[in-house]
Length: 296
Image (cartoon, rainbow, N blue to C red; front, side, top):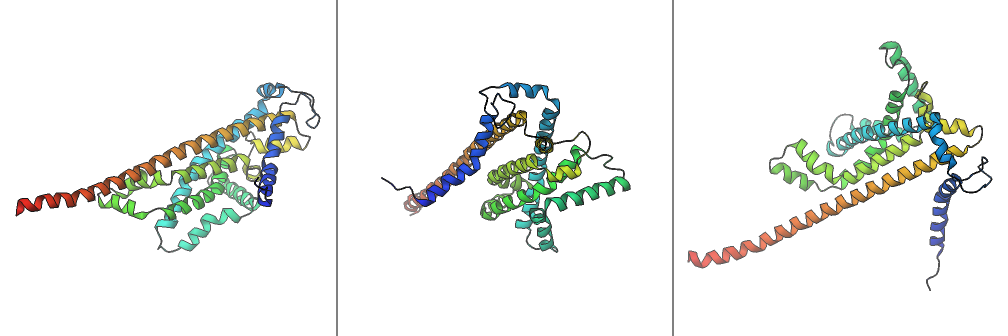
């Protein structure tokens, strides 16, 4: 019988430490009691009650909307920044540019939020925009923060790519933009998906930046939960958190599944191309030997 090693024990403890609180939260979302720490039987009334809590549901929809916009913008900007850092190796200010791209990773969110708040206030005084802080300013702040994570993830993938594939496509007459969209993008698709999911999760979870750059009518879910928890955890909070966990888990699984399928198709296509090239190389000597007697 295989012994249960210390490393396996630490793995189990670590997984329990991460996922057990989530499991407890989901279980207590079905608690019939108004006191979240006292079990009163199973009930789904808190899920039904979410439909009547327009303020909480509004913050959920608003947070999901901002997170989707942030993921799209962060992937676009982060990919371009990663492409510049990995493919354009010689230009003035490259080190400074790399530092500016990765600075949000180490910058305290309080400093970032305060600087963005001062920026928006100064812009409103100088050019009249934004007239009021809301969803757009939160989206800009989250994109600034999340694009750095996407740039790091995509840069790591771009450095691992075989440049000979792109060079072969350009030798065959493909323009650089066509090579980028038809060859490079499919090869880095898993990292794009990972960066998008990371940006979505970071935006959905952010409290500090949103607190600085939000305005009236733009309260996000973390802000709503934080203000509610200060007066005591409500059962509706457990219910909405469970729904978000379910949605995020489902989206994560779908992205992982389709990314895996795409990667397997790409590997099969490469293997098929290698086999066809090898078969052609074997046929050429046979053709030459067959042509030699005819020439004689």
